[in-house]
Image 1 (tube, rainbow, N blue to C red):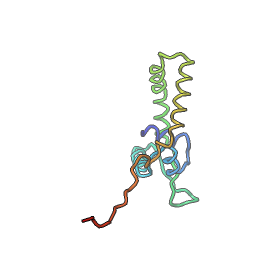
Image 2: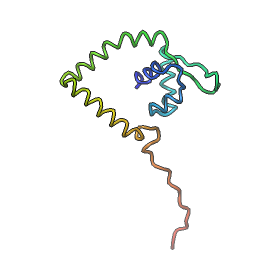
Image 3: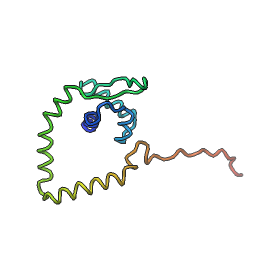
Length: 128
């Protein structure tokens, strides 16, 4: 999940922390904790949004750019090994189907989804 968060920051520099959390379907607190961790590791930097001093904009660091550059060939090689049994046409079909599944089920990935709604307590008197 941390790689996904870092990738989102790298792909959309200057995005707001809350906006990225919503887009990724991660609750704001958990997302903030992941950003804290990545910031401590020097992989992400936060800046105060000049238009909204309560908001934070996220940017990559030189260290994260270097890490991405080093890991990209390894990730592509792993992807190639995983998809090796499939033809090019099958790979395209698989990716198209996965995208359709993700998009069709997007609402289930949102924070808070699936939680039970609070039940109201009944204060009626017991019958005798």
